[in-house]
Length: 76
Image (tube, rainbow, N blue to C red; front, side, top):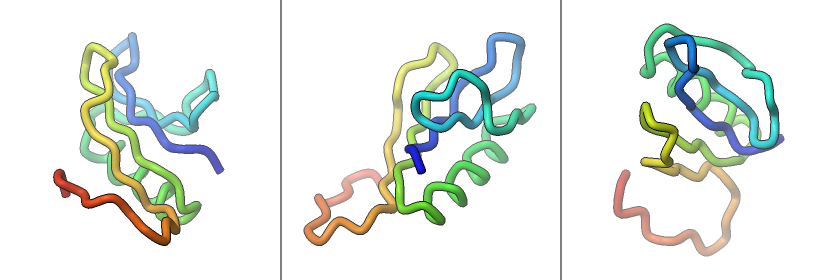
Protein backbone atom coordinates (compact mmCIF):
# COMPACT_ATOMS: atom_id res chain seq x y z
CA UNK A 1 0.00 0.00 0.00
CA UNK A 2 1.09 3.55 -0.68
CA UNK A 3 2.34 6.18 1.71
CA UNK A 4 -0.42 8.02 3.58
CA UNK A 5 -0.77 11.80 3.29
CA UNK A 6 -2.71 14.02 5.70
CA UNK A 7 -3.73 16.98 3.54
CA UNK A 8 -6.03 19.99 3.87
CA UNK A 9 -9.35 19.73 2.06
CA UNK A 10 -10.20 22.77 -0.08
CA UNK A 11 -13.71 22.81 1.43
CA UNK A 12 -12.42 22.64 5.00
CA UNK A 13 -11.19 19.87 7.23
CA UNK A 14 -8.50 17.29 6.52
CA UNK A 15 -8.23 14.29 4.21
CA UNK A 16 -6.19 11.12 4.38
CA UNK A 17 -5.02 10.12 0.90
CA UNK A 18 -2.87 7.28 -0.32
CA UNK A 19 0.03 8.49 -2.47
CA UNK A 20 -1.09 8.94 -6.07
CA UNK A 21 -4.80 8.82 -5.25
CA UNK A 22 -7.00 11.70 -6.35
CA UNK A 23 -9.79 10.81 -3.92
CA UNK A 24 -9.49 10.79 -0.15
CA UNK A 25 -9.58 7.54 1.78
CA UNK A 26 -11.40 9.38 4.55
CA UNK A 27 -12.32 12.97 5.51
CA UNK A 28 -12.05 14.50 8.99
CA UNK A 29 -13.13 17.83 10.44
CA UNK A 30 -9.86 18.25 12.37
CA UNK A 31 -6.26 17.23 11.80
CA UNK A 32 -5.58 15.06 14.88
CA UNK A 33 -8.07 12.28 14.06
CA UNK A 34 -6.84 12.34 10.45
CA UNK A 35 -3.25 11.83 11.63
CA UNK A 36 -4.29 8.99 13.94
CA UNK A 37 -6.17 7.23 11.13
CA UNK A 38 -3.31 7.71 8.62
CA UNK A 39 -0.79 6.45 11.17
CA UNK A 40 -2.77 3.25 11.71
CA UNK A 41 -2.81 2.59 7.95
CA UNK A 42 0.90 3.40 7.59
CA UNK A 43 1.79 1.04 10.45
CA UNK A 44 -0.37 -1.75 9.06
CA UNK A 45 1.18 -1.49 5.59
CA UNK A 46 4.73 -0.56 6.65
CA UNK A 47 4.66 2.71 4.74
CA UNK A 48 5.13 6.41 5.56
CA UNK A 49 2.88 8.98 7.16
CA UNK A 50 3.36 12.35 5.48
CA UNK A 51 1.78 15.36 7.16
CA UNK A 52 1.04 18.59 5.28
CA UNK A 53 0.24 22.06 6.64
CA UNK A 54 -2.79 24.18 5.67
CA UNK A 55 -0.93 25.47 2.60
CA UNK A 56 -0.26 21.91 1.43
CA UNK A 57 3.47 21.85 2.18
CA UNK A 58 5.02 18.77 3.77
CA UNK A 59 5.88 19.47 7.40
CA UNK A 60 6.53 15.99 8.77
CA UNK A 61 7.35 12.45 7.65
CA UNK A 62 7.26 9.34 9.80
CA UNK A 63 8.29 5.95 8.44
CA UNK A 64 6.77 2.68 9.60
CA UNK A 65 8.66 0.54 7.08
CA UNK A 66 11.02 -2.35 7.62
CA UNK A 67 14.25 -0.48 6.94
CA UNK A 68 17.19 -2.63 8.16
CA UNK A 69 19.32 0.49 8.74
CA UNK A 70 16.87 3.27 9.54
CA UNK A 71 18.08 6.88 9.60
CA UNK A 72 18.19 8.58 12.97
CA UNK A 73 14.82 10.23 13.46
CA UNK A 74 15.47 13.72 14.82
CA UNK A 75 11.79 14.57 14.95
CA UNK A 76 10.10 11.71 16.83
